Image: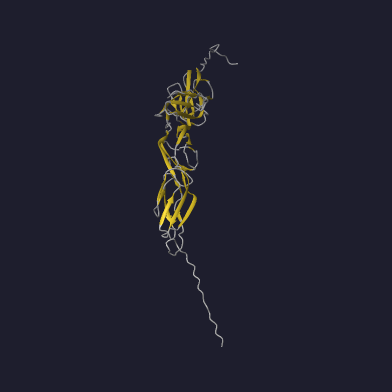
Length: 368
């Protein structure tokens, strides 16, 4: 029988330190929740190193720290390289350098001005000039419930009032600055135009109408009477000089230069006077004769006859018996459905009836 000896050799490799201890080298590692911000920008560093017992930080702004999780405030804008050197209990070290790890930008500065074109509620345009710095995004609040994100907006206000405008300017890293200018825009009300007239209709085309301006805040007025004629008198008179229906407009301007117009349609109506003519069956008769009078006026609603002999009548057609000779003026007054009155008259001549006298040539007459 042959015996063989089995030899087992165990080789162990040790990592020895300068202190004679065995262990793993430290590993430097760190992070931060926020790495971009505006000056002053505070950053808390999160140390995730392994096997280290001491730390040395350089923050790229000339400051350093030996704290495990330091907080640093960057006061100026720029890109900053951060270094962490860690050391373990055996004196072994590891270094982590992250270039441009921290990005600090200048805080935005919000500022603006406004150029106001027009100051009336129906005529205003406001051009806003954005004078902000270090910003890339903008939010405007015009004080009337409307907002926009345009850099240099134009806005129109629908209602009168004094408005404060706010601009929020932001940059790419989320920093913002607010600028509000109180009562930067003032919009004035329009004048409340109103007027009256002494009457609305006439049967006389030459009637002179009196207009009264009731606009309290008016400093100037312009009247348009719908006939091509106009007036700048505060409360003018006007003769429309023809029959028809007319619109009247009044434009008033207040002390702020704001103007408004009131137009009253079909305000004035000048009626035509009734065209009447007396028709008579005869204009010259003898005593004891009758004359028939009549009228054919359109839209007549009432008649008043004066027959010149103390007799009146209200029928459209009448018959008059003349018993006495003489000249008689017959008058007729007709009222139409517009209340306009027309008058006409005719002259009637009544002659005396002839008297016939028979005088015989001889008072004795023989037969045959």
